[in-house]
Each structure stands twice: as structure tokens, then as C-alpha cells.
Amino acid sequence: MARRSKRQVRADLVRVVTKITRMSAADARALEQVLFDNSVIAWQTEMKQQGLKYTGQIIDVPRPGQSDLDVLRALARKDAKGIISTFNSDLKRQITNLVDSDPRVRGNRFAYRKRIRAWATKRSQWKDVSIALNTEMRTRQIAKERFWTENKLLSKSRFKFTGPTPPVCDICVRMFARGVVTIRTVRKNRVPLHPGCPHQWEVIRVIPLDLETMWVG
Ligand SMILES: [Zn+2]
Image 1 (cartoon, protein in one colour):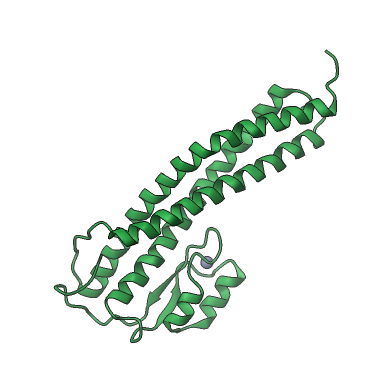
Image 2 (cartoon, rainbow, N blue to C red; image 1 turned 135 degrees about the horizontal axis):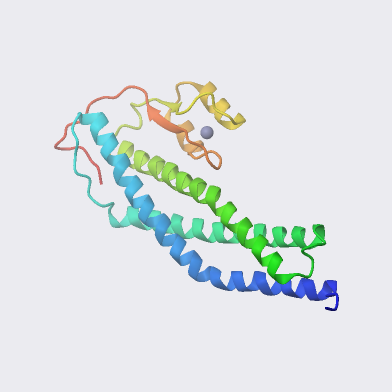
């Protein structure tokens, strides 16, 4: 078999990348829907927790109102686009590295595709978990802020950074070090503060709410 020229290998590379890119519009829509559905569940779970915290009762939480759904939808769309575009550039880098670094694979389309598939599977295993966590943490923050706002808790509440300790990244170390803060700090430092951040802002002293008048959506 004639040795494939670098140009031909590159052409193959471009073709495969293009193929995956072409799929990505549909992938982005599917991903957006998954992220959106998950965020609605995370929202309701958070509202239920806040309700329990402020009344001591397990309450039924309605589906978020239209304007809140719109916010969650827009974020899901933005995330899906970002995730797909990150994937595509990671993929391009990965393909280029593979072509340039491993002569045994060079020019062998099948070996090369097999490796890329293995890479994509491995990548999705940790990426999916990380994406799901980010969506959940961010949605919980949005839901909490809505709860605090609608129940007029913002000015009278103080907050602290909570979650697994010791924090592993500098930014979270700094947030823990801030101690008790006002909503201003919370809004300036919305979670997740970095990919995979498991931390949350919580109210430090709960002033009970009336079950009848409490807002949960
Ligand atoms: Zn963190």
C-alpha cells in the first residue's frame, strides 16, 4: 500500500472532524433538552429544601413559572453550545496530536478512528458527570436567590460558603475564608465558581416563614 501523504492524512482528519461537527447541531439540541430537564428538577428539589428549611414542612413545589423556565432554557441552550464547541476543539486537538505523535497510527484511518472513539468515550465519562454537577449547582443557586428575593429575606439574611472541606481550589479556599457575608458577595461569586465545584452559599440563621404565604414558585 502506498504511503499516504501527510496531506491525505490531514484531509482525512478534516473529514472526520467535519462529520462530527455536522452532527453537533442535533447533539446540541438533544443536550440542551437534557440540561433543561435536569435544571427544572434541580430547581424543584432546591425549592423543596428551602421550604423544609423555612417551615419544617415537606411541601409540594410547582413547576417553575414561565419567566423562570425561560431563564433555565436560555442557560441550557448556552451551555449546550459551549459544551459542543469545547468538545469540537478538544477533538481537533486530540486528532492533531494523534496524527503528529504516533507513526503507527499515521495514515491508518481505522486505527485512528478507533482511538478517537475510545478517547471520546473516556472523555464523556468524566465530562458528563462534571456537566451534570455544574448544571445542578448553578440551578440551585438561581432557585435559592429567587426564594430569598421573593420571600424578602435578602437584606435580613447573612450567608456563608458551605460544602465539602477542605476545598481543593484557591478560589473556594478564599470564599471559605470570607466567613459571614451579605447577599452582595453571594451575587458577585455565584456558584459553581469553577468546573466541578461542589460548594454552595447557605443562609446562616433561618428566620421561619409562614407556610401559607411562603413563595416557592
Ligand atoms: Zn468549590
